[in-house]
Amino acid sequence: MKKTVLRYRVKSLLMIGLGLCLLGCKKFIPENRDSLGDEVNYSLKELNPILGRKTIYENITSVGSNTSQPLEFSLVNVRTFKGEPATALTDKFPVKVWTKEYSGLEKSLAEIESKRKIEYHSMLEIGQKSGNLLFWESGNSSFVKTIPDSGYMFDVQVENAGGRKYVRNLRLKPYKEMAYVPSIYDPVTGVALNSYVWPSHTLNLYGEREPISGGSIHIFFRKDEDNKSAGNTLAFSFVDSLNNPIDPMLFNNTDWDNLIHGFERKLVDNKMVYQVAYPMPLIRKTTRYTTQDGQLARVAFRYTRIGFNGIRQLSEIGLQFAIYEEGHWEIQVRFRGETPKFADEK
Image (cartoon, rainbow, N blue to C red; front, side, top):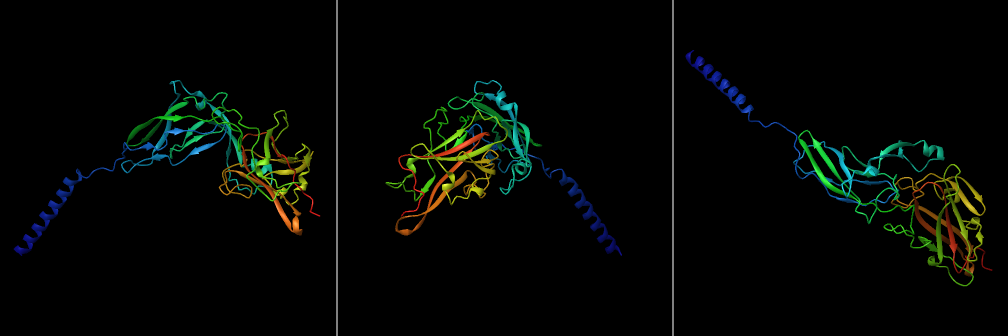
């Protein structure tokens, strides 16, 4: 009986001791607190967007293992290089924002526009949770400082429950706007370096005397500033070496109905005209109308004819391009020196 009581007392004392030990150790268990490490930073310290284009800078933040997430990012002290408030970047301007996904399969302008709405945004914004930087297309060089000017500076505030820090003196030095690409304009001076560009590729083009190279084909982008009619259009036209218009229908193997993502196609004064939405392409997404990376629109003007030795050949002029400004645009293809032969060889 005495041995049983002794065992019970020893067991009780051990339990009490263990409990006291746990209570005593509790104060030494570290609390799980948020922390903000010094390694939070931006890998890109200078932004050089082109005015008139929406540009997103993604995955440019580095956080490190000593920083707790989520983080909150905000822009502070947006200023000119001289330290004055940069109201051009912080004032709000109207921009078109997608509310539904663009597929490239839309059947009308109304269907495209139903997926966009107008919102007011500052030209420079930051993703609150991601830290991504966004430069909207609303500016132009009439009121935004561009290279070679020293441009703008800004700081980014980064915070969580563990504290706050600043990434200071990030730079913004935009290039001047270029309404279309390939462009004839110098992005620094804004001066036209030429009046035309060249095709992206050519295939089996023959004139009366010799083959036609891509270098002898000049392509002009023209915006009709006097046309104030509603909507936006894009027209394609062709001119021979004597400055005479060429009937677009001579390009008899061209898929005119699916050349671009345009609508209400019609032939007017030897121009193939479409109702369109801008920019073109609307977003960076691969569709039947774009290059493989989705960055540029892609068109091909094709025709077939019986060539030498009675062989039918496919001829083609290709162009990859983008247009960033709304309006009534025309892309004109001019032949210099030789005009293509569309008739079969006899």
